[in-house]
Each structure stands twice: as structure tokens, then as C-alpha cells.
Amino acid sequence: MINKDILLSVIIPCRNEEKYIGKCLDSLLEQKDIDFQYEIIVVDGMSEDKTREIIQGEKEYRNIVRIKDNPNRITPSAMNIGIKNSKGKIVAICGAHAIYDQYFLKNGVELLKANPNIIGAGGPIISVSNSDFGKAVSLAMSSPIGVGNAKHRFPEYEGFAEMACFPFYKKEAFEKIGYFDERFIRNQDDEFSFRLNLAGEKIFISPKVKSEYFVRSSPKKLFKQYFQYGFWRYFVLKKHKKQISVRQIVPSVFLMTLFLTAAFGFFMHSLLLALWTPAVYLIIIFLFSLKIFFKNGLKIGTLYIFAVIILHTSYGLGLIWAILKESYSKNKVLSGKKD
Image 1 (cartoon, helix red, strand yellow):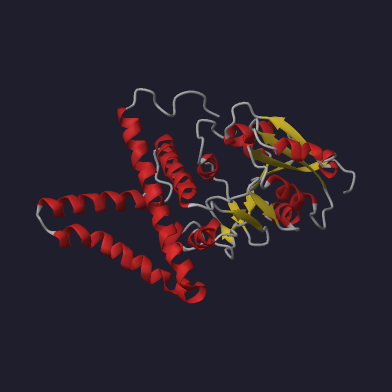
Image 2 (spheres, rainbow, N blue to C red; image 1 turned 45 degrees about the vertical axis):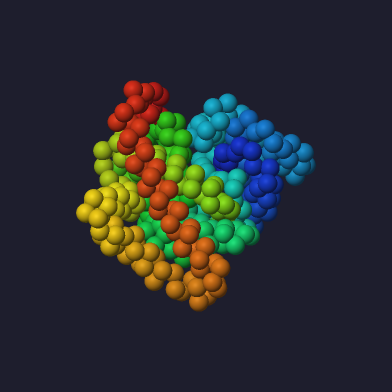
């Protein structure tokens, strides 16, 4: 790399990622057509596996990769620690659970430079996995029936979006609206992007800024991930007192409708009334799944339906649980420090 002042700081929040951190760093060190200097800051949440050993043990990492401690062990703290210790005029927030295209850094920086009216840029992520269930999840997380109109989940989308998964930000973004809110253990990136939008700033994504994200490989891990997304979505809505997107409340509305119609059907001794909502729901998902069945076979198609149901129910239950917890708990989740 050319010996110039650092233009780009790549920040990687990390905790117990021994399975992925090596591949992640390798992909960021094997970038092509770079005519600027960049640094990589891994902010580690006191990993208990071999994550730090892997980073410190590889010679090719030592000259460019810095490690910072994150004693709070949560993602927004890691992001803020990285930003405050960064030297670049542009900050890229990357995930350890991903690998990056050889032109990822080049194209991300160029996208920001080519569009002076935007403050953030990035690309849609490509969801990948080696297991059958993971492949089904990848398909579900890239389809409208699975994630609604989340444009940052569609691999070929180019244009303005509410957020980017692994974004590049001009440093002035943090000077204008502050850092990531550390009260949000999850959804901190959504909440930050929403603040940028409220401040009149724009985020642009392009498939040229490619990355691959390793999805959760088991139903249990997927359920936990999206339950947390739904749970913290409520607090984003509560903080800003605005609805971010209709898709983000649809799963909860559906689950409540399902419960109420089932309860009413049971009360009226009508099995047909109790089952009509889930029946219609399953028929809609099946119709959307026909293309998956024809292209990927019976097993992946069936797992795809299962994955979509997990995405919807876990997210919806998470949001409902957040409402109940906040309503009946004396210790409010959003009390305390605000970034």
C-alpha cells in the first residue's frame, strides 16, 4: 500500500469468532486496486476462545491490524471504541462473521467519493452457508416473503436505502449525530442509520460493494438472533416515537391476530375459525416457496418454509416480549447512558 495518511479505518467488533476471524481478516488484507492507506481495528470483547491468539499469531496481521479491548463485551461499545481510536477520514464497520470481496474497500470508498450528497455507503450482503438449513435461511433472508422490503438484503439492489449492512461512513457522521447508542445491545446500526435519516442524511448501497455473511446454521441460533432483533426494535421505536418501517411491525400484528382468532374460535367451538389464519398464512408462504422447490428441491424448499416461519415468529415474539417487559418491569431498558 502507498505510504500516505490513513484514509480508511476498518472497525471489526468481535467476540469468540475463532471460526471466522481468520477468513475475515484475510479477505480484508487481500484487497485489490487500493491506492490509499487503511488500518484495521479489531475491537475484541474479551474473547474466551482462540480469536486473539489467531490475530496475534499471524505475521501478516501484525503490521496493519490493531486490537482494542472491549470490556463491556457488547457490539455498540466495540463500534464506539473503534471509531474513537480510528485515524481515517472514512470509517467502515465490518463484521467478523463475514468475508469481503477483493474490491470491497476500493468500491466502498469510491462510492462515497462519487456521491458528495451522501454520508454513508455500502452494499447489500449475500447470505451464505454450507449446511442445508443454512442454505434455506440464506434464501429466506434474501426474499421479500422472508424480510419484506429490506433493500439491504437484496444482492442486486442499487440505490438509496434505510441502512447498509457493512457501511462506510464519513467521519463527519459521528460529529453530526454522535456515536452508536450503547443501550442498544442489538439494532444499534438500525438506530444509528435512522438518526442519520432524521438528520437529513442519505445512505446509498450498490452491489459493487460485495460481502458474504455466514447465516446462523441452526433453528435455535436463528430464532435467538431474530428474537433479539424484534426485542430491540421496540426500543428503537420507543426512543424516536416514530415507526421506521411497516415491515418491522407486521410479524407482531400477525401473531396477535393469530392468537386472537384462535382464542375466538376456541371460545365459539369452531375449529374452522381457529385455524383459518394459520392456514391462509401457510398457503401464502407455500405459494411464494414454489420457485424454491423447483430450483432447489424438496428438502431445501421445506427448510425454506421452516426458516421463513422462524424469522416471522421469533421477530414478532421478540417485539411483543419487549412491550410486555417494558410495561411491567420497574427497571426500564432505555435508562442510563445515551450516545
